[in-house]
Image (cartoon, rainbow, N blue to C red; front, side, top):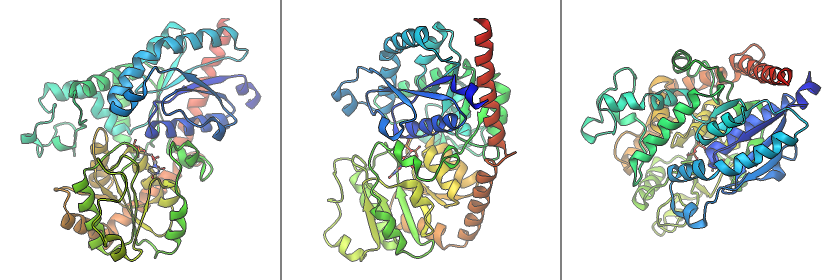
Length: 460
Ligand code: UDP
């Protein structure tokens, strides 16, 4: 059986953003462990490091992006350009590969945002599976964008923020995905386009699990007449530590020995992912709130996180000295290791889907501060559905920060949140065991890929 699968090469292409590259490389590792040969197709922009994955083949698809484009354009504009400029190079690659390969290529696995792969795969009659790196609940909202617009919920209006969104409990208008950009229509159009092209795929693979998002997954199965494979959490299927090899930035591991010196469940880990940015004023309010909370904290200040600032220079003089070692700053953390450290008591997160899932897997309560896109939906689910966190609801201000930290770490509700987080952690682990939901969906994904391969070979 394993030998039979080695004859099959799977082509996988990530969208070139950290939150997309990591889960796609994890999926590739999972499928490799099931015996498939793997080729990663990638843009030149943010290309993954092939030396971390000697077991895979890598092939660059020239994206034609200039340095000034990658430096100035936002993620939506960049994705739009990739969807245009990679069409021709991908066609050329497939033409050459499919006419020369001695192995069968049963399918192409594309990140959902790379919708251009649909027409290319159709042209080569190559079945296309989609990897959606976000959650299923937020995808359901994306899939309803035209309806939400028809009902007047979108574009989001300031005057309606507190209104409940009918048919999407517990979402309010303020929880709907939003993208701050010069061209708000570009986000709406990209979402509608990728949803349509997901619907037309041979199946969607999700880095989620049935027990976490059962109602969204059930609804998606009703609305989409294609297989839905929730086989996550991906990183928990892999050996510990293998996730950092998918990192575009080098993690600063010095924070681990600092964590070793902190008390059990005392540390607030603060990270807003790979894209979100904050103003200098927001940075200062967070810093003062953390300092006033008296809790130790580990804070990721990624290059580009603070607009118009490089690092910690905006902090008032004496601030760091007054912390007395209670705060530790890094430019990039080994996040999975940090979250699994016994000293970490809460994760102040922007609720990117990977961060949300990583926190769930370690049973770490969240302080939710969503910034854009699906993060608002994820934050609402974390705080109001799974009840494993608290949202920073009001203006980002030091007093509010301090109160919210206390609420999650020591307040009346903190115990309940911690218990919910531990229950959910157990579910995230159980679904991967033999007979668990993700385990079974992974088996069906593998057997569906093999059956495509065998029907293609019998056609020849
Ligand atoms: N991450 C990390 N170190 C950091 C901050 C983030 O390894 O210091 C990883 C994190 O573990 C997650 C990814 O970067 O896997 C961020 O993805 P997410 O979906 O949470 O947010 P995005 O960056 O897409 O906004």
